Image (cartoon, rainbow, N blue to C red; front, top):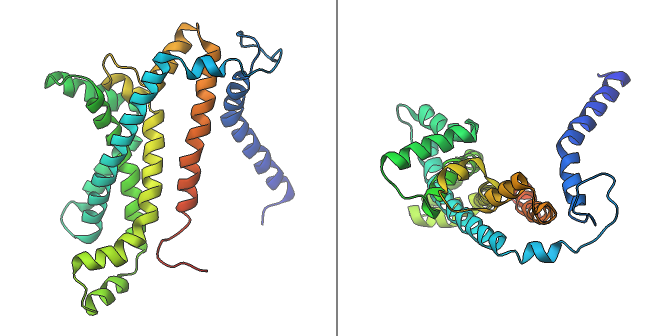
Length: 265
């Protein structure tokens, strides 16, 4: 049983960690409504005048569209590959199974700059033109991990008796998958897809090495911050991206609470 001092200390530590993580994000959101184009604190006033120029910025729109396409394609690829890999690892026993599982999970642990440099060298070696598909391949390397982990964890929670009962009642493999397995993993697929989309949409390091001359939204934001000429618009775009990104993350977090196997009314 922790003492009162320990609980207070842990509470203070949690507050400090949360402040370290979220105070800079809150400041960026406040700067989106800054009346002045100079980032200073406290802000001299509140306005929404930067929203219209930011939203109608043609370079930002092109970068946003490219980011959305890359994130959607990377998510679809991750759903297909990650689900197939999770079924293979879960259903079959073979030599090197744990090694394959480790290799599948490794990309999420590697620094993005290493993954980006490796992919860049690979594309240059094979003379692959940089573009949308090189971005998708780069993003899929870590999006697959999210889907794989979600689906594998859900498969391990499905009682084997359900599949056996379905087979005993005369269902074939496809019917068992359609009526038992797929409903059981559906929320894991959705949550994995949402997280994969959010990760892909926000990725900047891997994108930098695989995009070539094209600008995705994170690269556009980084470039504008470096030049410092359109910081008010950048703050608005960052605020909007944060607001939109919260939605899939929150949905995925909620869906991971549900097993998809047993439901209560």
